[in-house]
Image (tube, rainbow, N blue to C red; front, side):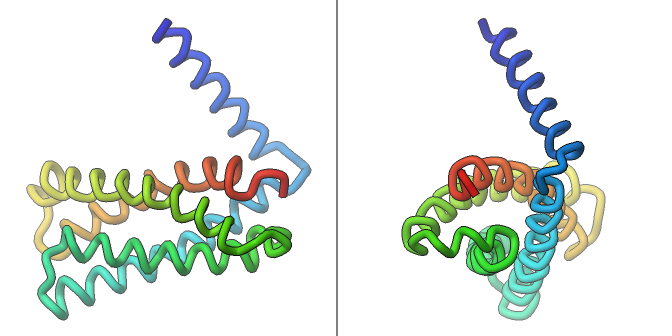
Length: 159
């Protein structure tokens, strides 16, 4: 049974990825807009993280929680206005609730990847502050795909 689930997940995920890239219905464009908004969010994330760590002296684990939260608000605002403008026809509180829930799970994934890669990989190979910034970049890339596919299929379903 587990082999079937993994194989089905891989095949289903691959078909969704191929649909995204080859589709003429704008999903690839929408993904690119989502990635651009995510890049803006990443700049917010990195800026807040480094201000808190280097400027204020906050421990990076706590600073990461705050910086990701700032990026979530930025991403929601820009995705609602630009990536999924049709979503403005729906109540903002319901939509933000779904977006926030997806992103809280994304935050947990981000935090695990950030702390894990900083401690086990980058912290051993690179000097401070390059170490945690590389860990942060890794975490952002991992969470990008989680956030897009879950938000697209739940928060912005039918748009």
